[in-house]
Length: 119
Image (cartoon, rainbow, N blue to C red; front, side):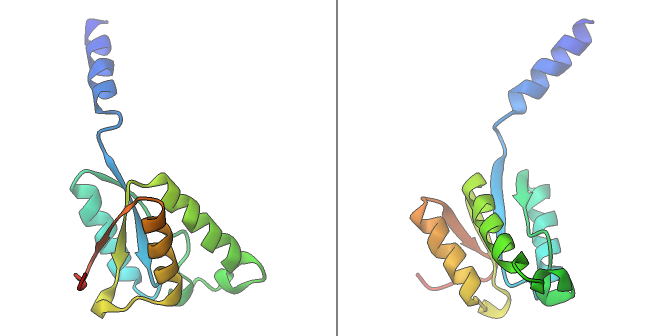
């Protein structure tokens, strides 16, 4: 019984110690999303990603009203995060991602990039 109590206390000590990072970027970079999610998770972060990859074959994204819902949902994912990590393969940042970066900054979130950009 003491072991269980000790175990639970140790688990509770970990609560809140993980940074939450939301991935942003074009969904055509599915492999880069998966790699970033794995890397950031192994570094001790909680990673929130996209639910569908519209530019990589998830055609459900393009049904009526779905893209708008997913865009809004992604803003809520940014709200839940401490920071965002932009998947900007080759430096590419599309309009939706620019909007997410602006939203994150406006809400005091740190912004990091896969490919460093000039300030």
